[in-house]
Amino acid sequence: RKEEGLIRLKKYAPLLVILAGCLWGSMGLFVRTFNAIGLESMQISAIRAACSAILLLLVLPFYDKTLLRIRLRDLWCFLGSGICSMTMFNYCYFRTIELTSLSVAAIMLYTAPIFVMLLSAKLFGEKITRRKLVALALAFTGCLLVSGVLAGGTARLSPLSLLLGLGSGFGYALYSIFSRFALNRGYHSLTITLYTFIFAGISSLLLAERAPILNLLAAGQPLQIIFMIFFAIVTSVAPYLSYTLGLVHVENAKASVIASIEPVMATLFGFFFFQELPTLSGFVGMLLVLSAVFLLSRPEKQKKILLPQKR
Image (cartoon, rainbow, N blue to C red; front, side, top):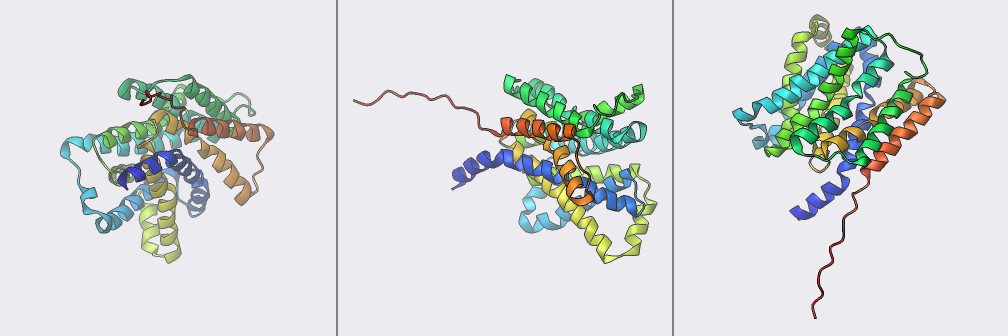
């Protein structure tokens, strides 16, 4: 039964990565609500990570206490996924938005699959195939079109904003890298997700202005508390768990490109909830990203091995 479960997981692993990208794409719906009550990006990021860590700490002991255990020598994996990845990418991404525009910042963020592909080839021996390169080109071009950066003319990009933009993409890429190290050391996806959020929550709270967050909690309004919990589940716990679980059977480079469905879903959510009609170039971009996702979601062709027949 265990082998059947592993085969089933391998079959649906790309769908888990797609699910993660779809859930991440819904983040804008929550962020706009938080903005309306006076919270800024880094404060929202801190709430997201801290709430996710608390939820997992409350639930995991009832599911399996052993998942709370990590070895001290492996602590760097979780410091990497929590601080070097999640906190770094959030800080760099939000700062890039402040210095440039949302569309330019989004494109800089989606340099992540390039970093993942190069790092995974060097660190884990993942082959850079023609199929991956074609899918990467399709996804990146699609993100360019969806963001509208090509239609908006030339954007001013200072050396600092360029550095921060690349930093956001590099930080985003590091989650796949550090998670792979942790998976290779035998850690469960729930353990990786938990400790990622613990360290991300601590570091984000240190960087954010904490007074508005404390005021929100002190108000104690049930609907706002429920909204914060729902925000953590939909945009953090569920997608990161799904993505990390998908990494068990999907190469880092493939998973990173497949997750590029996030801006497509963000555009669709914008259309359905805020009547933000995508442009023609945006629609073409979505088709390109979906083509890349479909290309990498298809199973690799296995070469048939002909065995000698018994006589």
